[in-house]
Image 1 (cartoon, protein in one colour):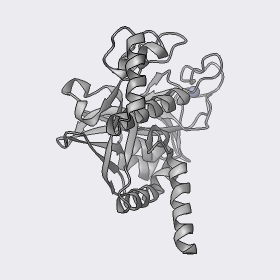
Image 2: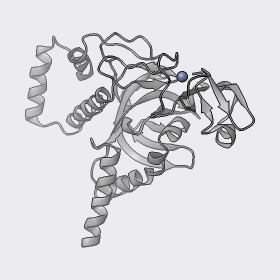
Image 3: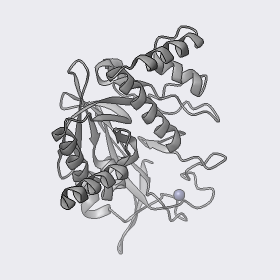
Image 4: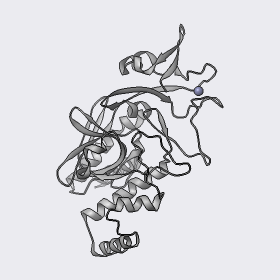
Length: 295
Ligand SMILES: [Zn+2]
């Protein structure tokens, strides 16, 4: 959404997302923004994303609802599929689909890193069935929906079908992928946690680099998870100490920030490490701590 209603004790005015800064939002508007429709009480949050230049917009606060029939109402399909918001656009990708994409990418990458004889034979057999498709990714697309859909700008959705999300190992990313929505996977190099942004640095098989980026939209919508990210850092450090692999799979928007490639994620569920989700990693860290304590 481009506009929001700002309600304070003195004011009830419409403001535009492009005319406020994150600082102003934090200082003045946070918690006081509502749907622009006067009779709608849905609460809004401010977001910005990088895409060459910043794009600023409002989105509905998690758990807040628009009144029935509000033009800004989140449209749920039959069966109430969750909807993903990217840059203010509603994209019909269910969380379960994203989880499947993340897990598929993990399996594919693990096979690539540690090919076992049996698995290789299996894969060849499978490939033959799907008319000499060389790329697992493409094979997956056919199995999933039959019609690969590029969601670069995020709108052309085929009714009832999940948009196809292309998968890329870090080394496979090309300049064409910038400004598109993709699954990106690689080995974790490290994590950099700052007060307002987090970079989860990935390394490709050829040494190329990209960072899974968590910025303002992530921090705004998932503040608790943002503040718990040091658990992820502990997990990474422990795994590295023991020389265990650290495979990260993520789903987000590719862009460039300060000359470095980033894949911006908008939800803590949109990255996994070694096939573990965010809270599973925290559990693992707590278990590790317990074991150390017992020893
Ligand atoms: Zn509304």
